[in-house]
Length: 479
Ligand code: HEM
Ligand SMILES: *[C@@H]1O[C@H](CO)[C@@H](O)[C@H](O)[C@H]1NC(C)=O
Ligand SMILES: *[C@@H]1O[C@H](CO)[C@@H](O)[C@H](O)[C@H]1NC(C)=O
Ligand SMILES: *[C@@H]1O[C@H](CO)[C@@H](O)[C@H](O)[C@H]1NC(C)=O
Ligand SMILES: CC(=O)N[C@H]1CO[C@H](CO)[C@@H](O)[C@@H]1O
Image (tube, rainbow, N blue to C red):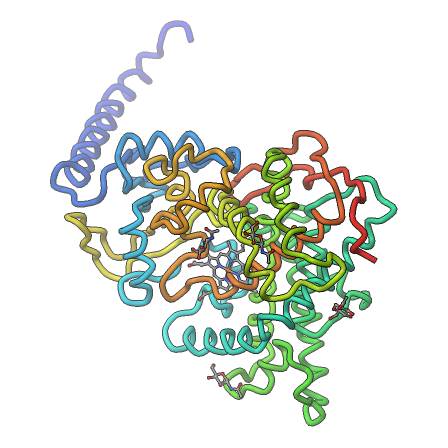
C-alpha cells in the first residue's frame, strides 16, 4: 500500500483504539479471574477466554509422555489446569488426587468421555451411564463375567484361540502382529458375546467393521463421504444390524433357549431388566469394544518391547519352559499362577505403554481439594500415563525393565485398570489372554521385529504399519 487513504485512516484510527481498549480490559478482567485470587490449579491459560484453540497434545512415542506434558508438569507440579476452547481442563499426575477422583465417581465426579466415543459405542453403553441404570447394567456384566469360570475352563478356551491363530502361520515367514492379535481376541470376544465361531463368515465382516469403527473415535466429525468418520459410522451400522438380527433370532426361538447358550446375548435376553433390542445392542457392542483394543495394544507392545530386549525374551522363554514339564500339555491354572516373570512383563508393559493414557471425569459440584477449588462442570483428566512415567515413582521410567517388578511388587503410581466404581472388570481376563498369547508365540516361534515400526501414542497407541514381525518356527507344540 502506498500512501493511506485519509478517509479510511480517519475511520480506522478510532476503531483501532476502541479495539485496543477492549482487549486491554478483557485481559485485565481475565487476569483477575485467573490470577492470585483464583483457586484453580496453576497453569498456562493460553488466549483470554477461549484459552488454547488447537489441542496442545501432539502424537509422541508411546513409551514417553510427550514434550507438552513433560514441560507442564515440570513447570506447574503434578496438578495443573489449562483452558481449551473456552473450557477449563484439570490434568493430574498426582496419585492421591487421582484416587480421590476415581473413588468419588457418582458423588463428586462423573465419567465424561469425549463425544466421539459416544457416537460409536452408543449412549446406552456402560461408560455413558450413571446412577441406578449404571449400577444395574454393571451388575449384569459382572454376573456375566463371573459365569466364564475364569480359571481352568477359560484358560483352555483362550489356548484354543491362540493355537488356531498360530497354526495359520505355519507356512508364513512374516506376519502383521496387530492383525493376528486382533483375530485372536476377536474370536474369543465374539464367542462370548453371541456364541459365534470363527468359521461363521459374518465374524470376519464384523471384525473389519469393529476396526473401522475404532478409527472413528478420534476422527473429526463430518458429513462428507469417504472420510474416516463416515466409514466408521457405516461400520457401526453394520455392527448394529448384525447384533440386532442375532438378538431377534434368539427372541423368536426364546422358548428353546437352554442353559448351554451361556453368552452375553443370552444373559441379556433372559434378564427382564433389559427389554429393548437397542439396549441389548449397546451392551453387546460396548462389551466387544471394551474387550478388544486395550488388550490388543498391550500384547503388541509386549511383543515390541520384548523384541527390543533379548535378555527379557530369553528369560520369559525359560520360565515358560521351566513351568511346563510337557509343552504339549494344556496350561494349568497352577502353572499360570507361577509365571512370575511373565506377570512382571505384563505389569511393565502396562506401565510403560500409554495403553489407557488418561481417564475423563467431570465435576458434579464445586470440588475442594488441598486448597484448590475446582468449579462444577470442569473436566478432570486423571493422567495414568503421567503417573506411570513419573521418575519420582519409577527409576528410569522410559526404560523397559520388567525386573523392577520383582522388587517393587506394588506401586501407588500404577493403575493401568483405573480405580473406584469404574475399575476395569476385565483385568483378570486380559492378563490371561496376554499371558497365553505370549506363551504360545514364544514357545513356538523365534521372532524379530521387521523395520523400526515405532508405537506412537496419538493418544491411543498405534503401530503405523501394524507391527510386522519375521517368524521362525522353533517349537513342536502347535499341531
Ligand atoms: C490390558 C487390557 C485392559 C486395560 C488396560 C483396561 C483398562 C480399563 C480402564 C482404565 C478402565 C476404566 C475406565 C474409566 O474409569 O473411565 C476400564 C473399564 C472397563 N473395562 Fe477394561 N481394560 C482392559 C481389558 C478389558 C477386557 C479384556 C475387558 C472385557 C472382557 C474389559 C472390560 C471393561 C469394562 C466393561 C469396563 C467399564 C467399567 C465401568 O464403566 O464400570 N477391559 N478398563
Ligand atoms: C438381571 O440383571 C440384574 C442386574 O442388572 C441381576 O441382579 C439379576 O441377577 C439378573 N437376572 C438374571 C436372571 O440373570
Ligand atoms: C487341551 O485342551 C483341549 C480343549 O480343551 C483338548 O481338546 C486337548 O485334548 C487338550 N490337550 C491335552 C494334551 O490335554
Ligand atoms: C503385577 O501387578 C499386580 C497388581 O498390582 C500385582 O498383584 C502383582 O504382584 C504384580 N506382579 C509382579 C510380578 O510384580
Ligand atoms: C513348578 C515350577 O517349575 N515353577 C517355576 C516357574 O518359574 C519360576 C520363575 O522362573 C520358578 O521360580 C518356579 O520354581
